[in-house]
Length: 282
Length: 307
Image (tube, rainbow over all chains, first blue to last red; front, side, top):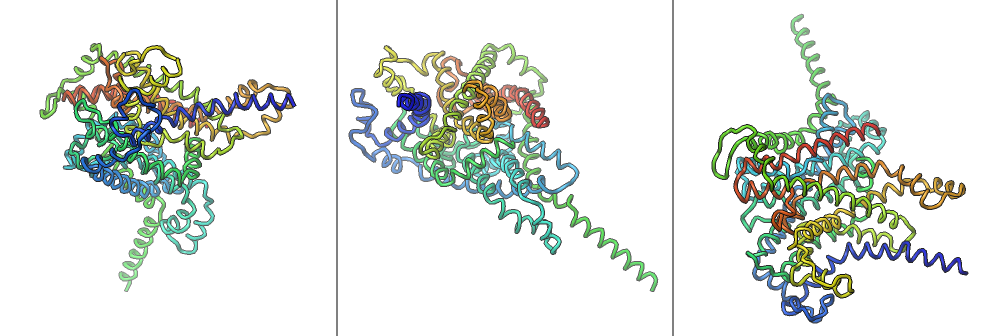
């Protein structure tokens, strides 16, 4: 009996309490974001109120946001860029990943190495000259600058991710299909791709998230408010000079966070398995 | 008659050669990697070469400038703000990577326990890493507000501090703040990767150790740590280069201030090149990230080759 109680105590202090502390640390900022966006300005800046709760929930901040800013446009831009770049990178990543996993050709190893190194290159290393390249292409100040540049860090990621997936699929089936007259590409599309669906979905989803969250390129290449994506528009367009409209800022941050959070709640299992495969094999 | 046969023979042979080439793995391979190679050459290799060139010119915004060899680099090395930036970047990187590793292992061990609502908890823990950093950091900026800081509100409320902390206004606290936020954002990646590593360790090893009378801590030290080491190494290397080159957290939270106390490579490069317009010098600043990248790549390759 005493031993049992001791074990319960051990579990509470050794597992549940520390875990609760971690969860609090991870989630408190989101809680704060949430309640700040549903408060009216008087309550938001009232130092005497209970600041951890909402007395008078209101949609004022959201109403102002939709009425006075281009938030709809920014959300659309984010979706547009993220869908397009995730789709492109997934396609090119499948192609390159399959080639590296299955085909033997001179230079394959060098290309594999280059992909891996590219994956490590931080965007802040080349953003200054890249801004010039983008201008040379006539894309500066346009959302297309992002569509073109985001795949440079997405493709290496997708490729690397998918090599591992393709390698885990047995070769026999596609070899059979090829003996039956299927071409290499045909075998890849009809046999291997359906079996690699979890990996493909994961890489597309992760590509979407990386695009949605990207900041450095979007900040550098675009200054026209109508062409900005959420991640850059909110901190640059909603802070006017030294004035911080915190209610609006938090409401906009919430709107910019919900799409990716939702995506993850649906694909959590794919995500964890993909991330773990990446961590163990990458 | 003869010539026709010969011609036909050549034709047949040529067709065979052509078909063989089309069917060869090499051509398929080159076709499949061509889009990736094209993009990498035009938008990574070329800009990188351009960066090296620009960093050796005295180019300013709107003018083309002239070639000045290493003047920018020499100027930077002598500049106290730049030296400060180097120091800050190292402090920021080492402090956060250490914290993320240390807390990440603890969190992974906790998540590996038999706990209720495991998937839900994992999802919650992952959230800071998924959500757009620029937006979540805005929330932290509001949490650290000089007048309305909810962090101070809570700490004062529970009696942990007796006076408001100027989180972003004081040089030391500003560094502490960016370190806290970076740790908050990166911890999920560490914890979930470590958790994946933990789950591959066979339970029998622990059972055997238990039979031999090894206590929890010894089990951790002699089984968990060595078997988790490959994952730890890869995750730490990744995080080191990403943190060293980090931009958004510092840019949004402190903008390098107060008085450059939190200025790191990427934010300084942005300020010099795009705010002050000295593009040549700014390029030189961001190229200082390159040696760090090289070191990480070297370790990574050495490590992966050994695997």
